[in-house]
Image (cartoon, rainbow, N blue to C red; front, side, top):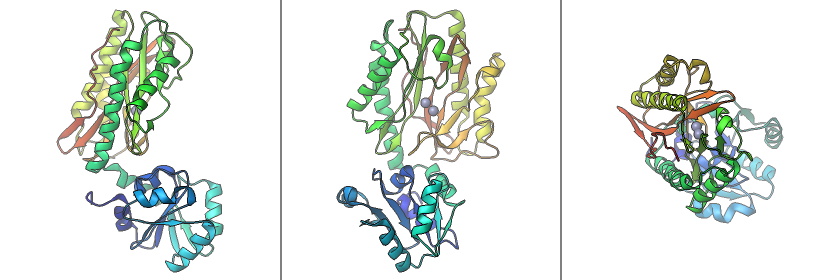
Amino acid sequence: MLHMRPIERLMKSLPAGADAALVISGHNRRYLTGFPSSAGLVLATRETALFLTDFRYIEAARRTVRGMECVEYASLRETLSSLAERLCLRCVLTEDEGMTVAEYRRFSEMLPGVELRGGVLDGLLGGLRLIKSPEELANIKQAQALTEYGFDHILPYIRPGRTEREIALELEFLIRKQGAEGVAFDFIVVSGANSSLPHGVPGDKAVEKGDFVTMDFGARVDGWHSDMTRTVAVGSCSPEQRWVYDTVLEAQRAALSVLRAGLRCVDGDAAARSVIEAAGYGGCFGHATGHGVGVEIHEEPRLSPRSGEEVLQAGSVVTVEPGIYLPGRFGVRIEDMASITEDGCENLTKSPKELLIL
Ligand code: ZN
Ligand code: ZN
């Protein structure tokens, strides 16, 4: 099915009993249309795919969106209800995760007599998004290339006296100036004792000699994300810091070495976790080993102890990001992105990960 556009795959996947899918969340809309907008919706039956949007977007949408008819609305209520009549809609699938209660009420009022059915569409779209087409993978690789450009160029900037906030801003500037549509998420730049905070927010703390600096960052290209983390040392590194760093690196390589289609996600997680536990840091790695990346920065599949019987599929893109966090002291995380293949994985992250002492 990968030779088909996402919208065509969705139309072919509509389950019996459902007449159409109504997609309103920003990331799923963008996935289906390839078009960024703050307003609009996708309505897809088995035969017809429509992108409804307003005056602000319609000209650009008609130029960009392929495989769908673009419809301009002045009154969404009038446009939708006449479409529902023309397309004989009785049961329409809606997103649970991408639709607020207020939006659900609004659409219910706009479509009297139509059953809006949740519970199916999120899984359907998630299943399509799980496997990246060659074009989608190319966008993710491009986002990762910009991210690595940022990493290469931020290293000379990091020195005692620079604050976490300055480093985060400079990194963002480098990546956006190089051509990213935007950043993938608010960057994490944490130093010294703050580096034990897995999702710490960059602040006014200045980098000091002997600090670890952990940077978690990424770019967005055509709606597709990249995600990478590196921890570097500034000026010097204690034997304990090096031991922890090397343990995380060994755990990260262990997980990368087992990834392949058919592997249970829990086993991908365990490959990294067992190295960290064996080194005596079992209680210091409190998050999952990895997550899928695509039109959302965190999506399926998850390399987690809680992933049940789920197995990896060829074409998925996952991060591998074990860490060790010693509260009040320091932390280390190393994160690459890998594309799953039938017999292994392709590591999409080319930046070095041996410990750098700046
Ligand atoms: Zn990350
Ligand atoms: Zn991540």
